[in-house]
Length: 249
Image 1 (cartoon, rainbow, N blue to C red):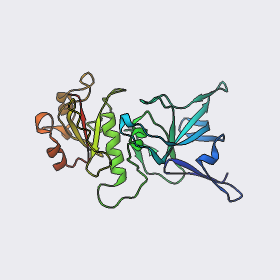
Image 2 (image 1 turned 45 degrees about the vertical axis):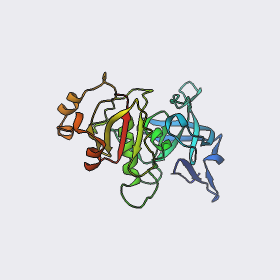
Image 3 (image 1 turned 90 degrees about the horizontal axis):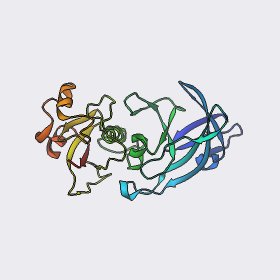
């Protein structure tokens, strides 16, 4: 193999004889992945187009390829790389870029990628339709939508990388460009509006055991005077939010 890159959610391998193979061609292959913690052997067990998850606003997509990855333990066993997501799937995909400490993914030089599982915020946002690799006309940019989604899914209101949600928490996510539309569940109320940097305002917190409006206001100037009743969808839009979320109050 001469080179290994990522396009969208699949690998692109160029071989020494000039052949180009993509993820479906690489099923059964073992890759040696270098990271800060050393090298890990990853085997691609299966690849399939995303069948979607209607219960969680993830539409079927031929653009998103779900991989079943196994990693080799020090004892020589092969184990699934991913924990089960909300739909029970233990799958993932590669994403070009380098993970930041706050959970978002920064652009990086060719050949640098992250393996993302569908149960985490990074994977969920791709399945929701926020594809950071896409070019789109007008604002906001695709990567801005993706970063805002990661913040929103993790309930990272302050934009400091500290998520305050919990596994299995149901939310209604929508945006100003039509990738996702509000479900308008009467059991949900407006929670917050998000930009790529975090929440622009918070009406109520998603998980009261993990944070509070008072704690958010005290955490720094970002949300000072922007919590509680003042935070409506209209206020959030006027202050730069590009994604919105409703949840049980």
